[in-house]
Image (cartoon, rainbow, N blue to C red; front, side):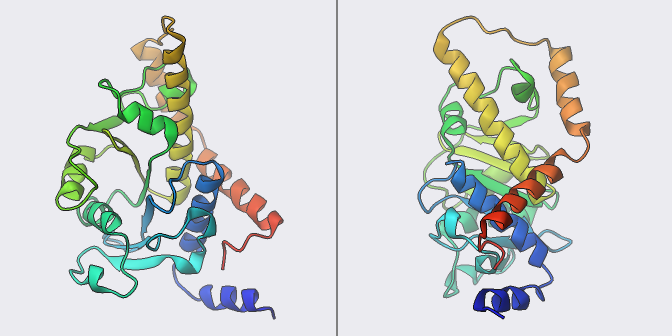
Length: 253
């Protein structure tokens, strides 16, 4: 058996192996879509019933290199986390630790500074007009944080937790975006479509032409249709893993 197969076999005994694989796939595809930023940004996934034990990417590892075995297992209630030899990025611990500690429903968190979502976050009116089915997907479903005061250290995680509340999309004003969802598949699917929606909106703004905005009724209907569409997120992630597998990627290791 090859070294890579040996390492994968050992990892497969991990009770969170499949969650690790899903998250590693999401990292790889986020990099491929150029939605990451250098060796920064963070994804996390709760693995305990109370949401406080979670997987997160290691400090300063490029998304395109992350493997299932690289992911750190942290406890949001552990005050010694930043004293570990493999301590996570301080901003990841501050923000994701607080969210997993306070929001058990937010199982998977994905934070990026992707181009178009970040442009939206710089606008005074940082909401998406419902002008197509992708933008309508997020109609009345976005929370906006207006309290940016630096690099996400100190009390930012607690503030963002309160601002997000029970919503699943947080536009982090002057910063980026945070997606909160139940699974890796749902979170990545939302992240992908939110960036596409932001690209459509920003491009439409750039034309200087009047927007063809959907009525509230049609926008809400469309958003609910997205929520009720069967298996779309799971199918999306399944196909992304299949592509990586066909390419011989080592993300499962």
